[in-house]
Amino acid sequence: MAASAISRGIGRSIDRVSSPPRPTRTEPSDRPAYFGTLGCATAIIAITAALFYILWVDSRLSRQQFGWHFLTAQNWDPVAGDFGALPFIYGTVVTSTLALLIAVPMGVGAAIFLAELAPRRISNALTFFIELLAAVPSVIFGLLGVFVLVSLLRGVVPSIKDVLGLLPPFQGPFYGVSMLSAGVVLSIMIVPFIISISREVLLAVPVSQREASAAVGATRWETTWNVVVPYARTGIFGSVFLALARALGETMAVTMVIGNSPQIKASLLAPAYSIAAVIANEFTEATGDLYLSALVELGLVLFAITFVIN
Image (tube, rainbow, N blue to C red; front, side):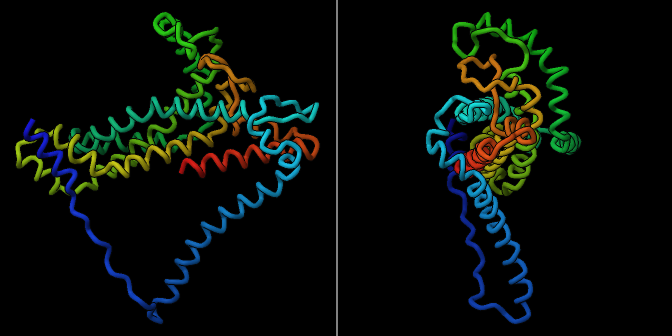
């Protein structure tokens, strides 16, 4: 206990390395590099502003027609020209949250193992396959979800309902395509990002922190949990939010397994719809300016959600 407490104290009292002083003026020979890199940084802001501007302008008809009611209305009827975004916001948030609940413990745990506990040769080999998994196109995950995951869930869900069937999220029939299926597929897609980034952050922790903890008698796991992980906490949170941004905007894989039903239901076993999925499914078939404007406003809503989360 004493060693653990001391290790925790070491982890909390990390030396702050001040940033190097910056020159007060730019030398003539440095100006091309200065303005070149400044242009790159400014371009990022310009692109973000342009995206927002285009979405804002092209969604003008929908915003004028529905106002803030667009965010709370549940009806989506292109024939009657009545549009509401709430079912799609609900499906996006629920599936992304479920994906994080599954992927974060698995991803952080795997990253800790690969960075701190596994032999270096095994860690490097597994990291290669994890990064390879992150490069797999999302449509492939969608196909695996349709042909493999849905069948597996049909066999597992009855056992889950026997234990948790009294809870609203696990009530109702299960037909395969559902928010649960979409959440599981998303978790498989984002876990490589969490593992890869978190592992690099953990490996960046100075060796002196580990040696100081071991010097006061802490075990390897106490050093990892009480010193290394707190030191890398900010980077780990960064990996989680990057993974969440990927989950929020995922289109094809979610479209193939979520069921594409614009309804709000408490059960995770019910089909639903996400913002990215409805845009992908209906944009090419949209007729009429109001219909197109409503879809663009959905894109604006997704952009705003991602911006607020980040």
